[in-house]
Length: 330
Length: 271
Image (spheres, rainbow over the protein chains, first blue to last red):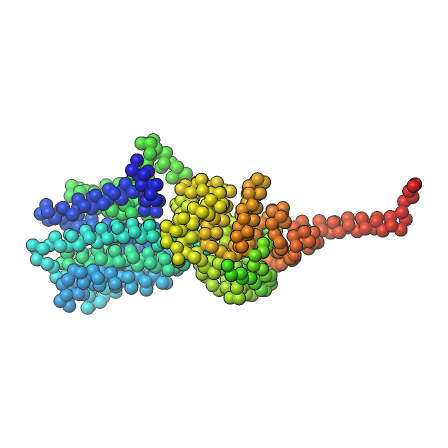
């Protein structure tokens, strides 16, 4: 009922279900209390969830809203982490400086790479982004000033202040969520969706596709980069295999699809569920957890083709849901 | 409103070994309605794509308001005041009907000056104009074909164009719907918008156009007043084939001979 009322205010559509967004904001408020439990394990798990959420929001702008499926967004996370690493080796241990540098470097790198790469459409774009990711990881691994493949130690705050990394990650996730909400409702959001729905029709309506695609990619790069900049000191050590990990590349994509592609609530819901379930399974089924994990993804794709956020807008109980699944497939 | 002419000069468009357009020239005067007709595959849509910047012509030039636009990208052409609809309608399926039109209002000629709120207000007005206000909040994917055609027109109008290219907006409509569409086009024209109308329906073209340009196999074969052009032998040949045209000519000759024979030897009449 609230959903219908809010839809009248124009809050549905491009941002996705408003109830889902409200749920996300409530959950975010609750997550603020996690460090107060003084449970280091729990704090670590939720910091990882927030990190993946920020990366998922970054991917959602280009992959979800603009419809350009990038397989190279881990590059931005890695570059962000290395920004902190480089600052740390030069004696700068300020988290704000880390994040600021990461955001600027990532935006510049995304624009530079985006100019050639975003001229490509469909699978060609995906392959090119995958190539960039692999190339950057290789360059870093062979760059002695960056520690090469043996990595860099990154200065950490003392244990008493360790929760600063949690709060910083929480803030980056929150800014990503609210940023996505504001972007989606602005002209930018409509340009992104128009490009996703039909790039030729978008151009015929005065939208410079290249410019807006680069904007979407760069904004997403900033989110992933900020997460990386916090990850480096929080982890205390970075090397190419950690910062450009395949998991960090694939997880945000799967999380966004699971939660709801091109919605404001989707990436967070997906991150919470996927990282949470993964953690639990890993704990109780050390070897078999990937099997459960894979099955869960298959089930969600089959039964919730538009992601979990979709459930919030469904009417008519189980029958309504089955009918919607059938209608979606048809 | 500034008034500008569209000049198409010796435009040629080649795809591989095929010339889809060859040496096409004509001028569209501001405030007029030009009908563009021709059999299937004659290059009408190609010409639309050249004017709107989707294709860069292989040769020749297109100018608008004295400015060369043949190599200007599509999104920039639209900001110069040239809008188009697509023959194969391209709605943004995930957006509502109102959002579809608002996107045009946001990024068109006057879009930079408009807030998102003002764009939605403009969209409401235009949906009223084209008769889609009743479905404004429905997803565009749910529209019927005639309504999708209306949506195309509304999206193009949202760009605040001076010149509107309409690519078969009446195809697939029934007689009543065609009449409604013609009324809509006349209303649009009455706002001072120049129209280029591509259409298969002769009746529609004749009733609305001031000038008709006929394309066949990529070449312009006729131009002029609708009634004159449609009666010209070249146009009949292009549409109905050479044999038909020849037979028509023979029939006409026989008629003429009979008439001249009658003139020479009028039948006796009793008065």
